[in-house]
Image (tube, rainbow over all chains, first blue to last red; front, side, top):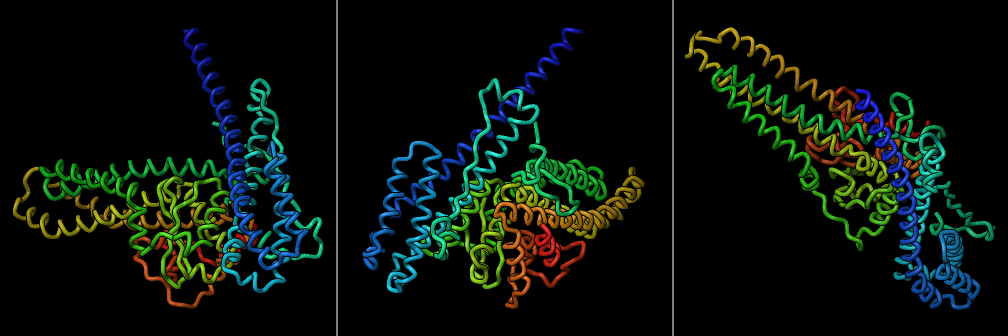
Length: 187
Length: 324
């Protein structure tokens, strides 16, 4: 009889432990997967940028500084080795594109260009998707951090080698560009 | 199973229940829906089997067994249809066609973005050519999630407002409201259908047969069965419909709250609802069977606030969002 009770308690404890363990792993996978969502959008944006730059150059070739900034952001994206560097490069790119779209306001012919309009819609919606993906990522990180710092997860986090993960910082697009309105590009 | 993490006021998977004001976890809500869906399937089989037995017994005790089998098979068929085919059915009834990347780039982009924010696969996107602004979601789980939007909705709403409506629909998908509501609709529909069949068969077959058969064995039992049947057949459909509509209204509040959470923008949804409230064009013509699925009830004039309303009053939804 005693053996059965002991075995039952043991079994219940093991099931409980499996449950908590799985929850931690699930949440960890969720935020890692959330990062890959951001990454997909960043790559799509990087693919569209050369096309955009070519189109804009056709009308505003002398805005050299803007193209330089976009180029620098692309190089930073390509050279990024971890999540933090990617996120930083992505913020650079957002700022550079915001500036580019702001400048395009001054060129009515460029704004009338069909190719430019499609690119503008695509890029601003990618910007939007990045914002949503970043929000979901932070949500997922919050859930993960909450579980590994509260009972019972906190007892498992140490042995499993899990520590609190950092949130992605939301960029402030107008930090360096005080006077320019961004319109749809950063909405 | 640990539920949503405790503490903190902006947890990603908990919202304030718009009806009771308590914090409820969206995980709980989803689990409730999934459990309730199974339960409804079971209730439907038991209920229809039981009613079938009563009907059979009332007509002729010897027939009871046969009618039960027919009723149970019918119930299972209805359940399966509600589970597997409700999405194709509702899309074709509403006259929806798939959105294309070229023609509806904007809508597709908005839907993709909101789906990313909600953490669900991008739903299939459909368009309904209708000037009245409205939308609905269907699909038994997030993998089969589908949203449909009228051309009128895209015309009157700006981007933020469209995002808000899409987020409301995606909330229905993410929380398995659609599976649950279509099971509920099928159950209620079956009860109503059964009433019609029973009334007709009693009028034409049962009564005549009883007159001929005289008062042989089981006569008193048969009378009790008939009385029980009449009560059940008159009351059950009314109760079932009232229940279904109460559940439907609550789901709308919850989807509003979740949608506002996904976009982090209750004001966008409130503005969208205002525009729909103030829309003065001709209303959408949709059959009553699918009216409950829409973002706002397409046939708003009829019974907008009563027990049988599918949606809460628009102004109430707007006020709740503004208070969030």
